[in-house]
Length: 504
Ligand code: ADP
Image (cartoon, rainbow, N blue to C red; front, side, top):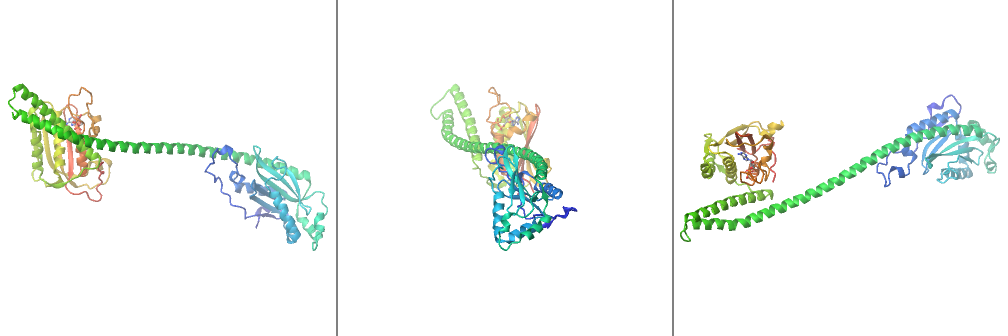
């Protein structure tokens, strides 16, 4: 217990109880079902208890009558006493007094105190002659708590209550002498004080309730949005998992179908070759031409199946990289040789430019060669007659393009073998440049499109390059030509080199 420094010049000391329950303000963020409008609000969560106690203290200071406030469940929120310490202490020291006093306090605290639920102000006499007035605190007809005002000496009390005079070893006169310190208050005065106090409490409760409702409704609407978002998120995750599963099934299906198609197709090509060579008897010119077409179409079909198989292997994560030391000029020649027939047929010039003295490249020969062949095949396909295709290799020292573009700090002097395949063909519109690396994407995807293909070639090249921690990019001018560039690192990436993980 502490003495209130604000006790002023009056002779009656005001005592503030400092062992009041600690109230967690607005601790109920987990709103029960039904929402804030339907749940029971506790006074303690509604009010700013510190400010409310100060209001009570100033009333006590003014009228020198104590105030206790209980929450609806009997939790004591405010207890400011004034003047009755000696009186009550003397009674409490007596066994009968202690018993009676405890009974009275329990009665006052009880939840269903008669009349309070109906909003009435009720009087409670203490057996010692003092008096209390109990006032309900309500909001919208609901009982939130109660104010116990007192004790005070009733205006007409001239001696201690009759009860105490019956007790053995108890001096009623001594008790009466302690009454000097207790405020004497006629009923009219107490009613006036309480009417004022009720006005203040009602205003505070109303404002606090409004703030609580607003904040709780806000919390509820945020919670509702959060729940909606969580549900959407869950649905999204489920769809994503389903899609992943479908994607896996698609890859397996592609792999299986491609494999099954390859065998009969190889026979078709083989048998048409044998027929052309006259192994099954002589054939005339027209038959030779027809067989030539069967063989040619069979071969492009086989190529397509090969691409599908490659792609499905990549997507199933079954791509292995088998590095070996590669002699770059020899690699360029091999790729060129493969493409020469197509280039010759289209009368397109092929130029190979290899920087002398290039170091050996540690990479998967088949994949690097396949990458170059895919790029050369496209170059021939999309370049009109008399055009020129260049395939070059040189040493490239510098930062990775992705690091440089993103302003990241990567090794500024990493060494690569850089391949460029350029043509003087139709070019790619600027807004389509990045998309050409997506699977099945073709700039011209109309049914009447002029150029054949599957839209898988570049996607495969990109995966092959990334499997080597390399980079690929394209530059193009519509109607003037295109250059695809590949970087294959000469050394393994070091710590600090920022490398995007290959996507398979
Ligand atoms: P495909 O060639 O089988 O259609 P690719 O993945 O190899 O598939 O290429 C995708 C698309 O990129 C092509 O359909 C074409 O529109 C465009 N493209 C690729 N290379 C070139 C090039 N050298 N010149 C113009 N367009 C190109």
